[in-house]
Length: 124
Image 1: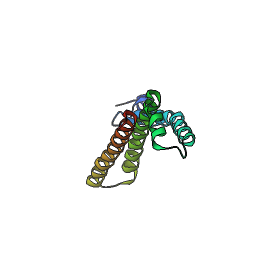
Image 2: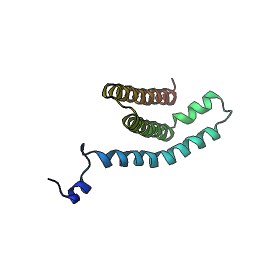
Image 3: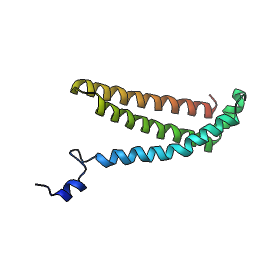
Image 4: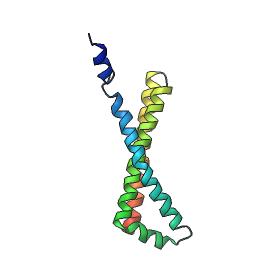
């Protein structure tokens, strides 16, 4: 029988409670400078021709920062969607279906974004 202190230190029934909370906060904090960099990049290249923007994205530092943003943002998206589904969708089979669909959606967005950044930065 767990003591009150053990319950307070415990991570809940699945032993994963604070891990998801901190992962979401970490991605949120990582997104702040990365989104600011994205906004700066967009403002810097408003009205620029495609070749100029492609040359900008071909810079390895810029490409890595953009890929970092996509990774962090899609992880944050996946965690947020999962939390919404778990909190508001009732019924086991609907919840499981929605968890699969939102997981695949987040992965698809991340892969499509990464592919686009890589293709543009490599000159395709």
